[in-house]
Image (cartoon, rainbow, N blue to C red):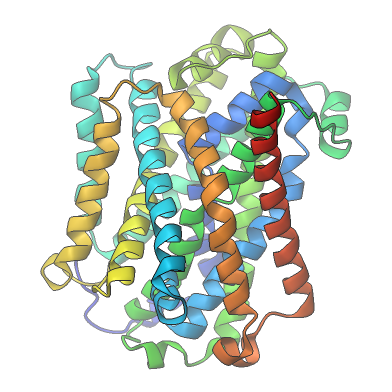
Length: 428
């Protein structure tokens, strides 16, 4: 990774241009192939019955990502570096292991989904296309500059608008859409609760928190503030910019989530195609139902966002591991200056590739990875909420009463959904 040699005012996060950067990237990464698979499955199984989840999860997403960003800004360090300083290993290591497992499974499933979707257009053996995808992603992470990565990610994020077009081409029923959006119908079946936890798990994935806290730090390093003390300066204005940035990004993410569910609910569910077994099938089945254009748009979204989300997951896992062990971790330094960090990125990428040759169904793995995230997210989010509510750590930036309430509501909702799934397994 090429280092940033000098501060540059153009790299400083400012206003609207920043809102089209970090927040958009994080929001788009949340709509990764795992999320697309989960949302497509919910639409295929329950039609418009999950549309209400988009507006419900929006404030939750904003809360958890903003709290993580604020923690990174105030401490001047990434999430797990702060956890290492304030919690005992027996609390931190289980959280780390859960995050690493979730990230690797999700990265592997994303690569598999991308490969299956590419094969809709060009028949390439899995043994070639999967390593090729991983090689392109890894090359960008190792040899690209932080500014290049940020700009590539920004343009890839815009590809998700393809799902708005795909939904429009599906010709949904307006009244049924309104009912699905504003009149939730919750079922207490194992199938419904499994999808519910998967939706919450993938929407509030742990890699979002770690990525956002670390990318906030990376932005400041790129602007020349290389020490933790320097990064804490000017917090008030920058936190306000972060808040706007994250609001834009999370709104974008939830709009895309809404249109993915709408697209498959209007087509696959209506045609009785409720069992999606592969990523290719999700796009292929749209052809006779909504036309080649809708299928192509759906496929393009899967491939493009995969190239954004996989490096967010593998780099996020490397950040977490290195910060827990006290190793240097930054995309703003060259590999020889942080060789453990880059080796960790390569190792997690290799593990994700390996998962694709162990006989897992990519689409099923996407759903399972969402469920894994649903179990690993609550304890980590609880720790973030406790730290950002601690005045000794946060000073004047401690959580307001409203943010505390929203944070606790989010933690409670995630715990309740996960416990509901466990109960359905025991009863069913």
